[in-house]
Image (cartoon, rainbow, N blue to C red; front, side):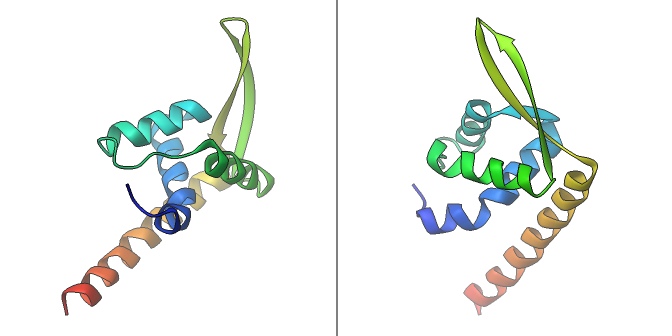
Length: 107
């Protein structure tokens, strides 16, 4: 399990990356996809995920739609056109930062 600090610093980028790849997702689906991809090493809490999603929505990066599934309303999140560009930039920024961190750590 990784520290809350590391996850908090990358959560926005994780969400943007997943939405850019999958089109639209609901909260629980995002948590499960992260768990699956990370082989259960990263477990996102709803207490961390939903404030991030709401912030992205407020910024105009993410839009929501609701759908009835099994007599329950499920809220889906997807990227706006601005969000797609933001995702591209945040992912690029992550890779550049990661490369620099690796240089620092191995020096």
